Amino acid sequence: HQDVRGTFKSDGSFTPKVNEVTDGQDTIAWIIEQPWSDGDIGTYGPSYLGMTQWAVATADTPGLKAIAPTAAAANWYSGLWYSQGGALSLSLVTQWNAMMYAADEQRSIQRGEKSDAT
Image 1: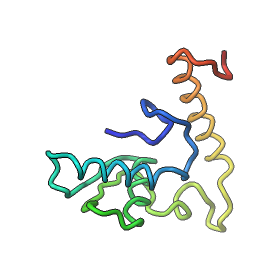
Image 2: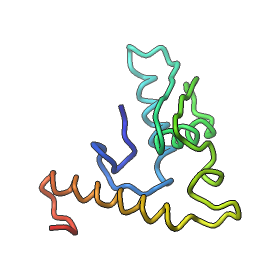
Image 3: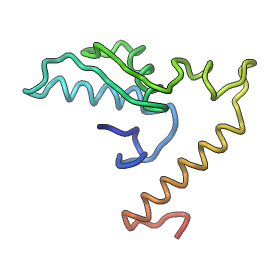
Image 4: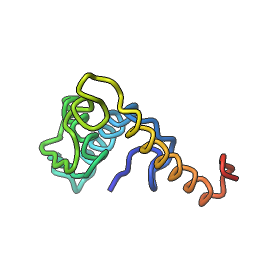
């Protein structure tokens, strides 16, 4: 199981739609190099993790043979993030960012790091 950088148990800071493709490709390359790997990789994940699978798949990632995204838009711009006219959905993004910020602060506190909340 791998979380997106800076979320849940993953290190780093979370910046949406910036590191997902390279992080996913790095992970797949690492798995392919392992002696127990046959080199054929499949991914699974819901919501944001599902959207990152689509992004990694469109980047012509060697070894990626299958994806199984669930509850995830295939296109950042046709999903909930944007209106039909192409404007960013301020309501959704504000709520989502607040949720991610709170989770990031909680992780910082649990690690004993100074955070904006302490």
